[in-house]
Image (cartoon, rainbow, N blue to C red; front, side, top):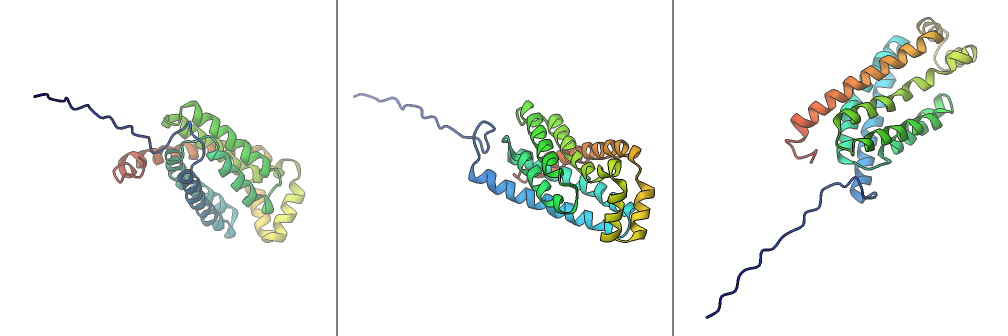
Length: 212
C-alpha cells in the first residue's frame, strides 16, 4: 500500500493597485470620480465669491481644506504616475476661460511636480503625499498673478464681470506685494487639509475597506 503526499498549493495574490503598472480601467474610474468631486468642491466654494472678495477667499480656504481629504484618498486609490497631472490639466481647462490663459500651463506643471513628489515616496509616504497636495494647490495663486503686472486691465475686467464696487474691494484687499503672502497661506492650508485627510483615511476609510 502506497501513500501519496499532498503537494502544497500556493496562490498568488495581486495587489489592488500597482504603482509600477499602467493605467487600468479601475484607475480611470477612480480618476473620473475623484476629479468630479474635486471640481464640485472647487465650484461650490468658489461661487461664494459672488458676495464680496473677502468671502471669495474664505471660500477658497474652505475648498482647499475640503479637497485635502479628497486628494489624499485619490492618491491612495490611484497610486500611479500621472494622476495629479491629469487633475492639473482639468483645473487648467476649467479655470482658463475666466482667468489668465497661462493657468493652462502652470496647473499641469504643478500636477507633474506633485506626481514626482508622490512617486519619490513610492506612493506610500503620507508626508510626501501631503507635500504633493500642498505644491499642487499653489495653482490657486495663478489667477491673481495679473495683479502684479497688469492691475488696471485686471480690475477693469473685474468691474465689467462683477461690479465697480466689487473691483474696488478687491483692489483694497490685494496688493502685488501681498501675493507671496497669499501663496504661503494657500500652501499652509493645503498642508493642514491634507493632514486631516490622512487622519480620516486611517480612521474611517480603511475601516470601511475603501482605502485598501
